[in-house]
Amino acid sequence: MGLNQREADFLRREPWWNLAMLYYKPYLDRFTDEYNPFHTGLDDLDRITLADLLEKDHASNAAIGFIGSSASALHALWHAAILNMRGVPLWPPKVYRLRGGNQLMTDTFAQRLGERVRVGSPVTGIEHDAAHVTVSYREFGKEKKMEADFLVCCMSAVMLRQIPVKPPWPEKKAFPIENMPYYTEVRVVFQSRTKFWRQDEISPNMEFGEPTLYDAWPMSEEVETKRGILESSAGALTTPEEAVATYRKYYPGKSEDIEQIICHDWSRDPWAMACETVEYKPGELRRIWPAVMEPVGRIYFAGAYTDNLNWGQEAATRSANRIAEAIDRA
Image (spheres, helix red, strand yellow):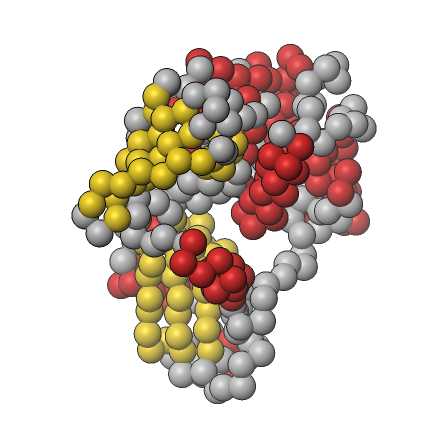
């Protein structure tokens, strides 16, 4: 595989997905504050890429190809340090979801909030001063306004950067809003007549490395049915035909009986197209952090992109709790 002896010895003791820790570990104890990646003696690492750092630390080309990237080395190490402080692996082998689907969470919020939730009402402008915030929005084709003491902005930076704001964001805030990097993808769902992988005695957890299908894993296994569900992700604009063709190209068994494919292309939904953020380029960390999480007057910012670790629901919840406490103190 092209790994050096040190890497091979490490992988005899550790799972493949933990290889990065061989090179990250010597740096992680420098970080003592989850929310402050600076002043640890490592600030210069924001000037080089993670691949550059791995090369400097004598990683093999194979290891660099697997765990390296063009992202800021400091940003990558900081994320690893946050996980280390929380006692969480780089790739947690156990993840959790709500029985009945994670949609239950938002459905419950909507039920409790009642008519205070306004759907189909896109924000068209924000005005703010020292005393109030006014939000303009369009509801059933009519332009309306709402005034409040505070505004908590939870939309992605992709949409926020398109909304007129008066007065404009200060330069310190404008940079993270305008330059926050995201990825977007297609959620692929395969429904099969049977759980065919069991008959073939093949693990359903697979990685394909193709833009038309990244991976696959089983879902909803607690549902009593002979049918199977595999979920996956793919690049934007992937079609059902492309996704299933890629799966069939690589699946090694003979019993595959996929009967239906659903592709939900998040890239086509402007309000939901931005998935998790990706690591920043060299030189961007100090310009984005901590400005991205700081309020502007009476406007506060929540959502996964405003937290220190961009892991979806957990990051969004942490940011929401932080903002609720800040407004309560204001």
